[in-house]
Length: 407
Figure 1: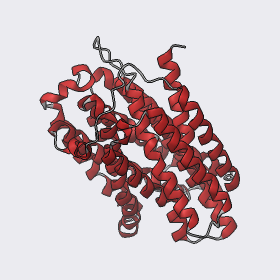
Figure 2: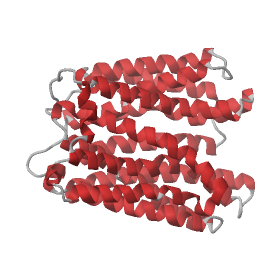
Figure 3: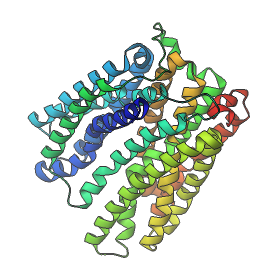
Figure 4: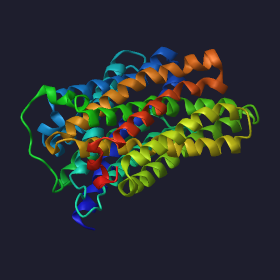
């Protein structure tokens, strides 16, 4: 195994191991509800506090340029260590109090030194010469691994859930191991020297037209993605109950959700990463958003129909809705100055997740007002806007910087 392969494999493992602290919240909440009878507001905060923390952390990191000014392995290690401590401390606080909310917020904030930073670290190994670049594939591998990890709680819950103490302890142990192992990562030949501090750099991604369009495409993509991920399981459970017993419906809905988000998403990330380096970033992102937006339109009309038919459509949705995710990040990496890639990726991620805080809470209002048959239509404007942005980028002169000129 060569140095590049070993380093990227290690990075993927460390990133997923640390991000498990975030994903475990989904598995922990049902157990806490059963044991401590926590209310809906507290249960919601246990999940949303991580998202709010991540937005806070990424915005702070972007404005201070930490992803580019701090040595990546040290930044990753410190973030993972703090996140590990915050997660482990959950075992010593009252699950019904405010202390656990603060700890979840801190855990989310630390992910700013893991998720976007991991993508920046992967770009240091991207092959750019000879017309055979692999930027899209490398970032796609990382995003695919994270996507698979994010769906794991649905699989755990399908088989009866997991004890929350075991989940917290395991997540803490895996994050601690990642904090130590990341020091074995080797930066690739594209690693740039640390730039001087300049707070204005964080916002330059919206001053440069080509980068602005790439960021607009990402925001359109994020408008749809996390709202679909958050509510797909509920949608499938309600639909399956119309043709199955409650027990069977719950099991198959949770299993189907894991397959759609984890398996389908992983296939989408890897496949799109491979194809985007050969066919072009805008080609893949426009195609993926066109298909995912179409699935958002059609899914509601299959509500209550054959579970097999609905699952088939949702699996296509799961593949296409995240297939383009890594390609927006790859586009920003290719359009940015090498010394500012980390900051640009962090800022892009921060704004995308800030937007998801709106759309995740928009869906229940849509369900209440229109029912499941039409609720997902509120997500369709996202991919429409994203397709427009990437079509504009495709004809911009800077598009020749993407995927070695393949746009």
